Length: 114
Length: 121
Image 1 (cartoon, rainbow over the protein chains, first blue to last red):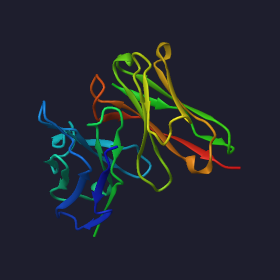
Image 2 (tube, one colour):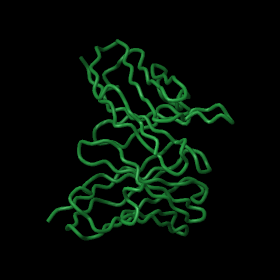
Image 3 (cartoon, chains in turn green, orange):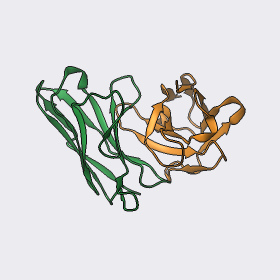
Image 4 (spheres, each protein chain N blue to C red):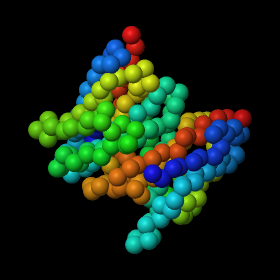
């Protein structure tokens, strides 16, 4: 199975500052035939189901603020929040969907206000 | 609008079984795969398995193979996830989620609201 490892486990950032969460996969999730990275990012707030933010590693879901961006390719990825807002406090998860039979999530990164 | 509505909270004894439902609306039910993901208290997301709602094919995480069964009722646009031989470690919120695009591969959107299953004697 593809193992997804996020870093750090928790992160405290000041309002208005940049926050970056990293995600590393144990094998490449780049599909060579279409040059797409099979990676998504989710945000989960307390008491709510996860919410899709990013897919194909860098495509922002409709309605997601443009301060959220995804980057990376192959095995190394990042989710960046360019200017942290209070409502961004949440746990963030990466997920690979490269393996069509077995899907896996990262362990999550808790983002807080400093 | 696409919606997944799950059944309510359950309390079960160790060794019992639980069956959680996920009713879909707002789209052609048989065109999209549905997954199940669970989240133990204070823990991360754990993928459990999926069902192809068109042909009924399933795939499970090795961790849950043999103890989890996912089925569907196309006439009711509903997917079911049953966990047998429950133990305290199965206490969790169970989510259903649809693959966002028709086909097999893809990210999850939308998600159901979650169903809390508590295993306690």
